[in-house]
Image 1 (tube, helix red, strand yellow):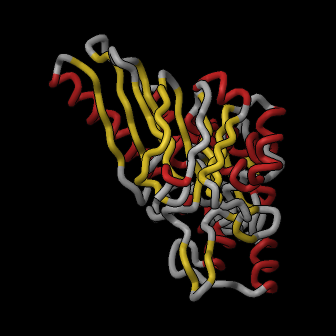
Image 2 (cartoon, one colour):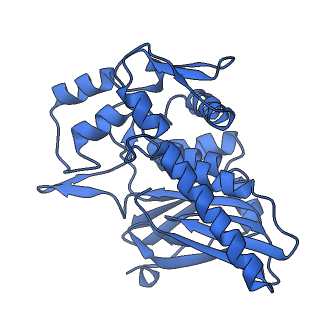
Length: 307
């Protein structure tokens, strides 16, 4: 998925721990093979090549996944949209960043959006009505981690921890518990706040790692599906959820919405989210009520806490 992963199993039986980690690695690799658009034979790559109207059969697991994608597309009022491949290309986000013209953006918008993709649930078939392109960037890691979470724990294993490119999932426990860090929004290698994680997944959306420059202009890699342009929010948003897929989807959605609108949206839906916004006076930290209930008070960070 174009990133690295760190996996930890807690057990007194090394052989059992290694066997579990190998099984979890296979789950992640199998998910990548099915969903990555960098793989020419993946489900998404084949769908993107099929002529409009040609149906692609799905197995039960991916039929369930597509159902979830459509559900969250509607629940997020289209702020989560996994069919933005045409816009991703026109901005050069996965290749060479560029600043497209207004006309190019409008043309790409017409060939973007999950509204152009149809799922026949009873037959488990999917097809495109127009030449839109799907991409797993806003949900692939979450889906891979959810599939890992469905692997049953061996009785010899107390728990495991996976960090998949910054999204973290845990299963089971250790005597001291799992600990994760909220990172600085513009310096992801700088841990700022330690929080305990006893279940589920933490996903963070921000621009520090994949945003690029085109000449003297900054090009954000998270696009607003409604405008066809990079989201205006400058910072990062972290979401906790039992489901890694939902955490992944919601972190992207809230990043697109931004602090003011996103925080209200999260409060209305009881979403555990935390916004981190760099300011001259320090790092502004704004958790939702659900995030505070789960993780406690998150301190504001003064300038000396920031690089």
